[in-house]
Length: 329
Image 1 (cartoon, helix red, strand yellow):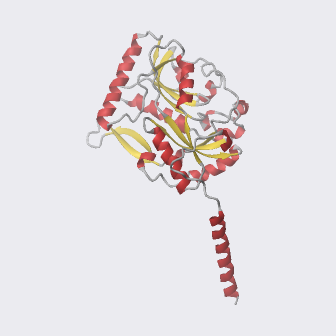
Image 2 (image 1 turned 60 degrees about the horizontal axis):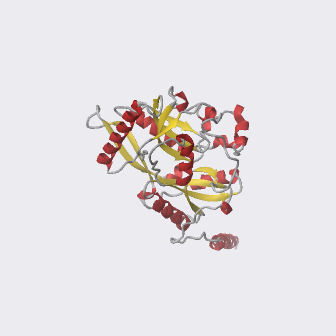
């Protein structure tokens, strides 16, 4: 009798668990909707993935739908290309001639959450999600090393990585907060770039060329010590934000490292700001510096070599690169 009662109790518990699961509301998943992010979604989000280039919009929409259908999570689409153009305008200034072409850049956000702690708890589960069902939705990571057949030659290899592994907590871009100061004069740049090996603040010349920008929270956990705790309140993130790792900051660092390792190498730098991480090449005395034209031509040769080898430009460097002043905070 006791054994029968235990079995009955176990069966009832299982039935209750299944009932709760069945009763849980499903997140809407309509392939014909874009689920654009709005302020009503909540103040805090998780950046699940981002895409750059002519297919960015389509890929981001596909992943949003997949997360909603497969994982039953409220995923949203955000096109931050327009915001990036505004940010770069702060560096470029009004005197630049010609047209600046910025590739489409789209993000997939999950949320929203009422506060950062809630988002961080959800982040643990997001990082455990299965990889996207299509390789096109995954990050392609390119590494360079000595060729196995000829150790004296460099060889690049590509592999696919689950984008959820590098997801991170960020603010909802549609929820307004205090406007940051002019990035070129922001004193916090010294803090954000203190541990950056390739910091643009070390560039001895007043001008450089921006070749890529990775949008997103650009605060590296080790870059800020406890002595700068008040900094986090100033940008509206709170003391615990020093635990946030920046995927965009790491991407920028790795790109600069790769550019410096090429033969011939580029004099590559990284600038971490409050909202993004910018990768640049070279140091120049001004817009009319003849060496700037040489750097542009060298960059174009690299792009053509990438196209011949991979059939595409996996680095997605700006063409043409954008002159910008080196900030002196």
